[in-house]
Amino acid sequence: MTSNMQKYLDKAQVLIEALPYIQRFNRKIIVVKYGGSAMVDESLKRRVIEDVTLLKLCGFKPIIVHGGGKEISKWVGKVGKEAEFINGLRVTDAETMEIAEMVLGRVNKSLVQLVESLGVRAIGISGKDGNLLQVEKKLSDGQDIGFVGDVKKVNAEILYDLLEKDFLPIICPVGMDEEYNTYNINADDAACAIARAMKVEKLAFLTDIEGVYKDPKDPSTLISELEIKEAKELITDGYIGGGMLPKLQNCIDAIESGVSRVHILDGRIPHCLLLEIFTNKGIGTAILNQKESRYYDGEQ
Image (cartoon, rainbow, N blue to C red; front, side, top):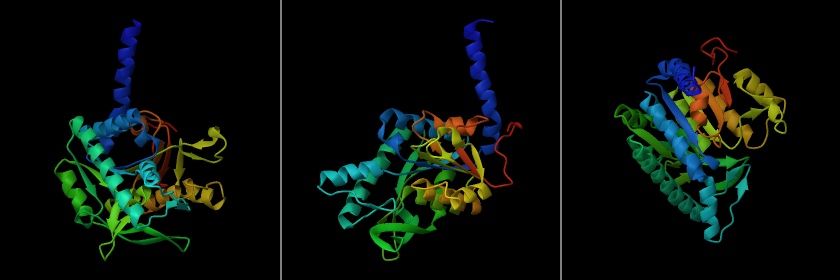
């Protein structure tokens, strides 16, 4: 057998490996929280959007919830302000809120443009549209951090309607309270709230780390899969800290609310979504219910 023929056979094997996953998740809803370095690097950005559009064309029903923190910080600096964070949350006064909404709207439409260029119909919406994301003021350990919202209700009918009409929804994490004030929403929180409300099949967080480590200083301690009980024990025993703590808690909340699987992936790896969803071993950390099994061909 020639080396060229072997290459073609290897490609065919990849497609065959993906088949059971395509069958299992066909017509299932997947929420992708898109943020971090993968939003800044244009090459990575295109690969992420290629992944999501391929999922769509394979019969999945993806929803993108995007962040934009680095871009917001850049524009806040341009107007002479300094970005301020408390417990990982951006302190958002009225002027910063105005900048954030402008920047997030710009990011939103750039993603719509990219998806459309790949032949998939996309609609970008804010959490304010149709009162999609209804919020109340969020405090950080009792501290007032301004116009930062905590999602209290998701008007999921809007998203079901868009999916039914074969659109790919791209959601900007801005919402309103009962008095119609505008609030910035942490994109992780927004993605988790939407996933919980719709009890989606998968929720994937694209981050700037490979996944969950038992020891953040030791890459060899990367955990490929975690049951909820194990994830809670890691938090209780003090292994999880920093920005991973609220992210992992979001994952646990999502699973307990009916989401089948949650994935934490390194968005800096090209096509990380495809590698995690369509291959037997995956590349990130999967958080799952005790009853769930991630490997469908019997591999452990």
